[in-house]
Length: 390
Image (cartoon, rainbow, N blue to C red; front, side):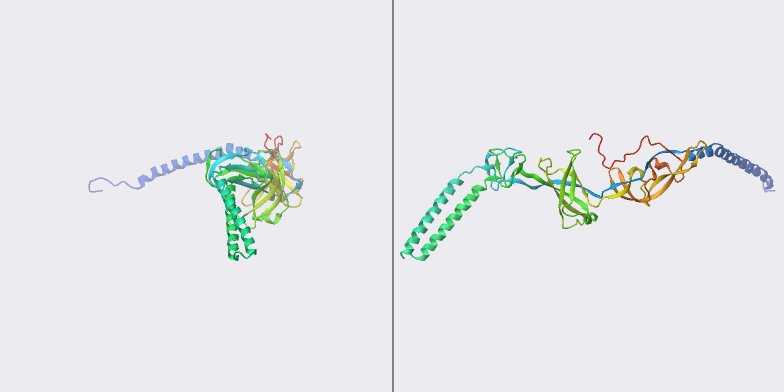
C-alpha cells in the first residue's frame, strides 16, 4: 500500500484488455486482407486475363524486294552564273534612263546616263591642246631635219603631246563613268532610281542576271564525298513548280570541308532556257550516287526505333482455333536499316522477302501477343509521295 493509502494495480489485470485489443485488430486486418484476395481472384484476375489474351488489331504487309537507288539529298539555293548590282562610278543627276525594268538586254547596252554638265567642253579643250601639241611636234621634227633646232626641243614636244593625250583619255574616262552599261547579256530587275534623281557614286541602279544557265549551291555531309564526282546527274525540284523536275549536272566541289559543320559545299548547273529558275530560290536537290540495287523495303511506320536497336513485328502462325481459324501471334525481330525513300525504308538484314510484317498497331504488342489482321486501312508506302493537292 502506498503512503496515500491506495492499493497498487497489479500488472496482470491489464493483460486481458490488451489481448482482446490485439485480437480485434488482427480480426479486422484479416477481414480486409480476405476481402482484397476475394476481389482480386473473383474480378481483377479474370479481367486482366481477358485483357492479356484479347487479340490486338493490326495491319500488315509482305516484305518484298524492289529496285533501290542510293541517293544523296540536300537543300540548295539558286544563283545566277553571272549576276551584278549595277551602279554608276561617279556622282551626278540622272539625265536619262534608256531601258525598262525586266527587259532582256545584250552586252554593252546603255542603261542610264548622268548629266554631263561641262565635261564635254573640258574634253574638247583638252583635245584641242593635244592637236596643237601634235602639230608642234611635226613642225619641230622638220626643223630638226634641217638642223634648225636641237633634239631636246623635239623631245620636249613629244612629251607634251603624250601628256595632252593622257589628259584627253582621263577626261573621256570621267565622262564614261557617268554612263551605266550592261557588262553582259541578261535580264534586268526593277530599277531603283528615276530621272532627275541625284545619285551618289556606287548607288545601285538596277540588278542584272544572266539566266540562260543557273547554279544551285548546296551542302552535303563529308561522308558523301566519296560518292560524288564532277559530271554526275543532279535533279532538283522547287515548290514553285509542283510536279516538275529540273535536270542538271554537278559542276564543282569545294576544296575544303567546313570545320564547324563537317559539310562541304557543292555546286550544280542547270539549263534555264525558259527562265523559270531565279536567283534566291531554294531547291530540293538529289543526286543518284551509286549503282542500282535490289533492297527489301517496308513502310517506315513498320519500324520501331529504339536506342538499343530497331525492331519489327512479324506475323507468326501457331496452329488454329476450334473453328479452324489460324491462331496468329506477334514475333519481335531486330533489323538493320539502310536509306529512306519517301515513305519507304530499306532493310539490309533481319528480314527475308515474303515475311509478313506488322505496319500499324505494334505499339501495344509484345512477343507472343495474339493479333487479328485488318488491312482495310494501311499506312502509305509510296516511294515518291506528293501532297494531295498536287
